[in-house]
Each structure stands twice: as structure tokens, then as C-alpha cells.
Length: 151
Image: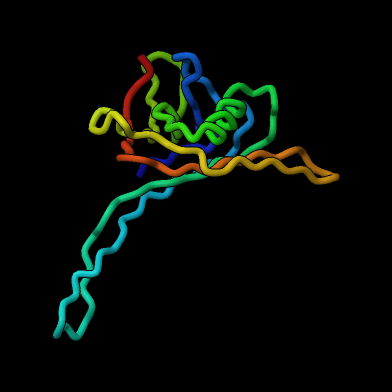
């Protein structure tokens, strides 16, 4: 069974056509769901269902850094409501040539309009802690797991 060290996780977004790493994130998650469609008919004793629309959403969090270009890009996406196709959620990130990489991304090959919409941008602070940051997003179109190597 393969396992992946959390130290190799990352989240990136393209800024001016350059894949940009979020510098202060330390957790992310995504949730893929299949909605239920009731297919019961009159006379059925037990309810019946089928899988309806598939969907996905997620969150990421870490430490707030107002100078982080990726965090600023998310704020701009929230305010604009624009769809973002380049967010990547890395299970295994690397920049070393030929190293394996594993990540989730919007499947723009099968749906050119796929991407994420930022639905939440939160910051916080406590008197004895470090400023925190988290964001939430909702997927539009399909999501795709990518298993590749660094070119």
C-alpha cells in the first residue's frame, strides 16, 4: 500500500501563467460527492435511489500572509466570482525532474469550463497564536486525479 507524507503536500494556482505555490498552507481537503436521485415509484415498499449529479468542493488552511501572491489571487477570485481552472491540490509535490507528482485538478480536458469558485476567505488571530487563513471552494465541472512525473 502506498502512503504519502504530509510534508510533500502542497496547493498551487497559476498567476500570470506561472504555477505559484501557496507558501503558508498546511492542510487541504477535497470532497467528491454523488447526489441521490429518488427512483421510487408508487407501490414500492422500499425506497430506491440512483446516483444523480456528481460534485466536489474543498477547503485549505494555514497561516495568513498578506504578501503571498496566491492568497491575494484567491481574494480577487472571491470578489470577482470568476471560475479558476488552475488550482492544484498536491498529495505529492516536487520540482525535481523525473520525480513522481500526484494531485487533483479541474478536468479542463473533458470540460473546458471546469474549475473552482472561491466561496469563502477567512482570516483570524488569537492573542497567543499566529494569524490564520483558510479558504473554501466549490468545483464546477469534473475533477481529475493526475499521476505523473516532473518534466
